[in-house]
Image (cartoon, helix red, strand yellow):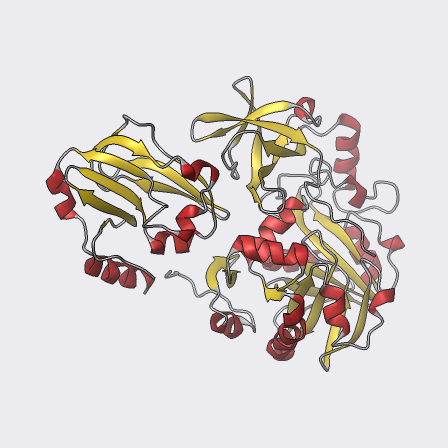
Length: 129
Length: 368
């Protein structure tokens, strides 16, 4: 299972990539693996204000529906429209083409409160035990 | 995933672990939900063959001179039409017509029958059958029996390599006792996928070796192990009911569209008077197939709407891998049950357009 060093992680299995004041958000390799074949994704509209820990969207696999939570607060500036027709991209490339939304961060320091790759690796090891 | 009460394991639990299956709780059992991925497994069964461990299901034998009469009292279908070596899909009903369980009933001889029952209902069914046993002997064979399902267009060719049994002459809903890979097996031409296939009852002690022999024999045909996830999408495409979704103590077989398994003319059975009344008065709701016309998945419990008014409730829904569409089964008021009716399902506060469609959603082309 892949946990890139360059990203930060939430306990709800979202990842965040930060570039200046803009953050890209998606779900982790572990999350897509647990969900199985993803068949539907619901994302917010551009301009939507995301509150931290509030649902930003929904991912449905064949077997389950799962909320995706905003790991940080911010305003949506772009959504990955390709997921509407090809939600399986999240299974194939969760950290790349399977990104979900880009936001301008309300507070760039909020990212510091998220887990590092090492912490996230330990977190899911504990969750699986 | 940690669990409170200890989960039960089938004789194939170790084999599932070695195959890397994802294991989940189902009806008190720790069962494989998938091995390679639900959609890939689903396609394997539709195009080649799949092997399922369904040993969590229960087997309850009814024997003695009263066996036939007891089985008839317990079940809605007409057991007078059942001959030795034949299986019947049938229902156990309460006096009010509510469904205790949907089961298959095997006639081994005039004084020897057995029920194959849902895992989640096995204890309840055993109590129910014992309570109506009169003079018949009731024996729970569940722990001693493993059940493997071999399903798909290649199933017969694969099985033929391992058994001398005359499979070509074994029709749908018939069974035969023979050896498979050397192990004494009851071979039943039945299944829960909408494909041709077999259910193989074998001693628990032989289960793992039979499982391995089948996977080895079918590898070149594309046979692979299939989890409960694909079992659910396969049965839903075929519009086969699942207890706890389409059926429960408060639903009747008539509302569920199972009238052809209810022999209202003939011998008495538990629930007959209530079901006769329902047939005369008309069922207050009917199970229908829905196809989503906009993106989304309709899940169990979601409201079915007509012009913003709730007129029904989804019982099962999924993305159908063979069809490439989202489908659902739902109970609706009879006035909305006609194919073509335009309705909506409420998905997270949003009304998503659906149409009532004929079932089954998927029907295999006849190959035999």
